[in-house]
Image 1 (tube, helix red, strand yellow):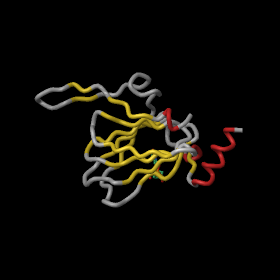
Image 2 (image 1 turned 90 degrees about the horizontal axis):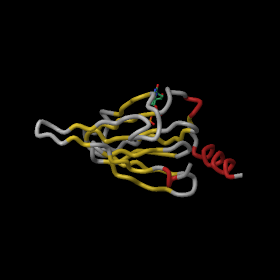
Image 3 (image 1 turned 180 degrees about the vertical axis):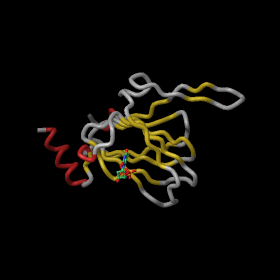
Image 4 (image 1 turned 135 degrees about the vertical axis):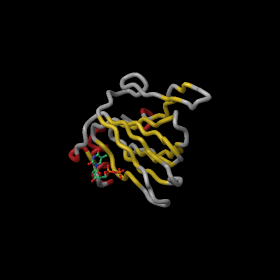
Amino acid sequence: MALSDCRIIELPKIHDIRGNLTFVEGDRHVPFDIKRVYYLYDVPGGSDRGGHAHAKLHQFMIAMSGSFDVVLNDGDRERRYHLNRSYNGIYICPMTWRYLDNFSSNSVCLVLASAYYDEADYFREKDDFMAAVQALKK
Ligand code: TYD
């Protein structure tokens, strides 16, 4: 998997004067079965989140409210994405280093994930991640 596999996905939007509705179905709108949902909220201005990679986990992040940036690095290339729409999200494939910054006030980041929380799936150190990426290329 590489940065080119990660992408912004536009979700269905049911426009209604009573309020819009968006939905996400696993294996349809996102390329994995959804096993876990978590969200970041009350993020103080100026703080960073993330700063890790996952070996096997697939994730999809949506700015449910407000906005923030997601910076992705596959060991070769880095790209910054700005999320600010409730009907757009970013698919993050396994073996992608990520961090989140530039949170607006009252922003909420919803994350859909392909597996239960498992600390053993994390690369917490960037050097370990880079070494694992190089090893996969051999
Ligand atoms: P972490 O994934 O490092 O957060 P972020 O990438 O947003 O900075 O998780 C922060 C803490 O929360 C860490 O102690 C693990 C715990 N955690 C769970 O217990 N379950 C979960 O589903 C997640 C995502 C984190």
